[in-house]
Image (tube, rainbow, N blue to C red; front, side, top):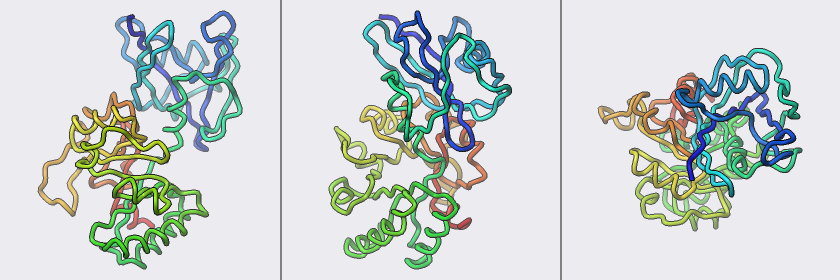
Length: 312
């Protein structure tokens, strides 16, 4: 069966709501809800198809669209390759040029049903924030880190990795209890950089695997978020094959912790991240100011160990 290539738009407002449309009468899967977009014609790039389809379907002119994910899905009657873009700026108010209904939706609380099966994992990915913080109690000290964490949560941080390799297991557990307690009122999700069983036992929202642990894994845990550190194409491909929730790809830029080490650079990062089926965060020398650049190169966002706490 041949593969139909499709450009798909996630039109996203500043408040995080995304635009969904229903399939109009007379089309396959009539009445099901999906993200707008359409078939990539011969000779078109995915971006060109996206711009054309949004004008034809919604009457909008795209100003800023960022490459995001590429996913394949097998329907009973066809196989599709979906090229997703996050569209954050456009001209004109969207309207259903083909008679389709439109609805702005929160990815975490849909009020429209049914949704095309291919879009369900996309909604989960959209619930990941653009910033992924990594703890740094080793440099800040325990209390200094906890104080910085509270300020960062006040400023909107909602995803954190607890990574403190220097601590004993008992000290790590005590710190984990405090971090989870501080983060819980903000509905921030905390992942443990460690093993799956410990993350589950200690009540973390998920686990973050080192690249070595990733490559030994044959099946992901289903009852928690699961992320991994990747440094090359093989590791990223394995993370995708396991269906992890997201990956961190590094190092993009030089870092204080690894001075003189080879880096990917933005072009190297894009060469690996663009086309990924799962969200990828850029790590290594990152700052909040680099989010736009990360989006342009296919990242979901940026991961920071020092940059996030310097701002908090």
